[in-house]
Amino acid sequence: MAETITLEKFYSSSLGQYALRWEQNQYDKLVSDCFGYNAVQLGATGIDFLKNNRIGLKVAAEPTLRPLTQLLETDDRTPLQMLFEAMPFESESIDLVVMPHALEVSEDPHALLREVYRILIPGGRVILTGFNLMSLWGLRFKMQRFGAKTFLPGKQFMSVFQIRDWLHLLSFHVDRGAFGCYGLTFSSAQIKEDSWIEKAGDRWWPQCGAIFAISATKEVPGFKLVGRAVNKKFFFLGRRPAPKSE
Image 1 (tube, one colour):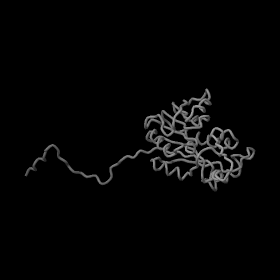
Image 2 (tube, helix red, strand yellow):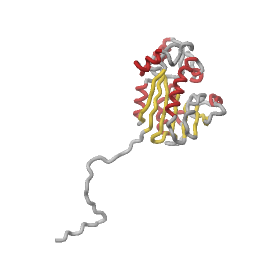
Image 3 (cartoon, helix red, strand yellow):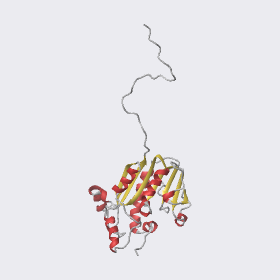
Image 4 (tube, helix red, strand yellow):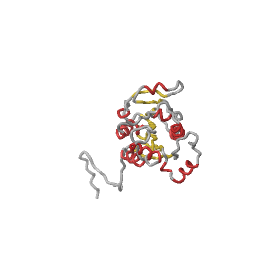
């Protein structure tokens, strides 16, 4: 039976620290200009991905209670245990949702995205990070079925194109995104963000980064009048136009 790696265990490794530095930087930039009243972080509650956001009420949610004890006293997030695919929030009540690798560890990624769409207000934002299937890390992940050692958490990988299609079908508008972590070396002495492969990856093969970040807003279908305006007088309640004088 293959070994299971939790997201917390992955972030504590040298490879996870390399990935975490890039992800934290992306979240800090993407959440800085998000405003509202309520924000929710789904998973990885041991790390505050909302620390650079100024929303008043922040919720750190996990499916189990165990990781919630790791919150620091200075953390302003409210811990909450809940099922991600059926969250206890009213429809259109949340302004911001961040999802660090929530789709990989979810039992039903489709249901999770549908639930996120339900709780977000019109114009609300979802920011998610994940492991890119179209990368060297994704290739090694596929080799696990042939006996390779497990090194990443999660049940499945998804490409960015696949996630963008899911978001589009749910009427999300993807407006920002980034790729990072192009190396395949697992030695802590050699993993550096300023290495030559990071610079080359950003320039020559950006869509092959091992981790991606996507930011999207919820769009609600509306209507607008189209066509030529018609100037015509209508008469109601039996009223008739006055006869023309000769």
